[in-house]
Length: 479
Image (tube, rainbow, N blue to C red):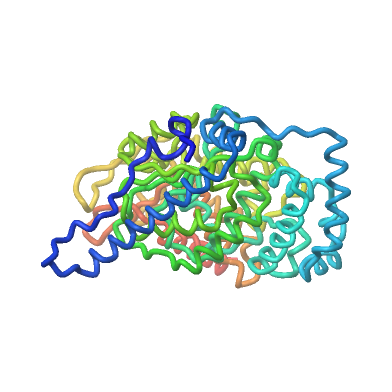
């Protein structure tokens, strides 16, 4: 077996022991048997990566090594190459077309025959026409499955996402890093502790929206690919179920139909043997095409060690969604999404069911965030004091609460949305209140609830959404 360049295989990554440390007289517990299974499963995936690397020619191995270590080259094209590939693509479509392509043709022929649409698939597959056409057919199939056949031949917008989708969008599962890596590629983080909280349908819909709507149109993504980082994040207090493997595999298959190319992937784990990690690694790598697998690295270590390991692969740690202690950096976590909203606001084609995202009322909230006023000291029920700013909203009794600046601005803000809320079908009102709640939280507006003892506690997102809904209903009764 030819030796890999230093760091090309797994020289920088911890391997798990394969031996069973259980004494011969000790009966293995279910937990011990599961840990042994996980250990062997991860070893199997690392063996798979090593095997894939061993099959490569020296040129292919060098290209994969360069992509992982941020010194690769972008896809080079000529106008003649693009024209030739598009002609061959059109010919191949006649042989590979499926029922979902026929549906798309009947709905909007221009959508699926648009050269820019087809070019995304060609670039994602390095101009391999056969693979590109098959990926497009799969893409249309999964789009119909997860969004509905009526949406196969049109763009998916925020209005097509439901309440669970929006919660997932802003949950922290995905994070598009500010800036680029040393090669100029977009870096996308996925925080592993969020897996299992949401249904597979929501996982794919948000993956679609992020990778297809936000990333696939970018020239640098089409030419250079992107970098995916699956990072072990702090575990929530409540136990999060491990996603079912069949569901994870289906989501992975659907994700692979999206026309983006991962030119480097990093799995970063704090511990080597957990149900979640073994499932994520095993299913992701077994589903990936060989091109992706040989550009994948698995790392184990502390948060600091993992971040410096990523830095050694050309990825900046300044805008990593976790700090060196492993805490989620809430100040930057969803900045990427709100920049996206700002871009949509500038687009004449943007239509939102929440008028806040496209109306002058947005300016009022900007002023709200910049408003001045005397801070208010609140005694917390858990002990200690907290300073409520003039932007924060208080939920309690008495004129002190009614006249608080944040309460007045909150009421004015909801009044500005009440007409659209009232006109919306009942089935859509919960989506509107959920989106508005996420917007308020993202803009660092806090809500405090007064307890029966007169102390205060900070309200969570579901409680704030209920408060938004109640205020809409109150305003409606007064009309």
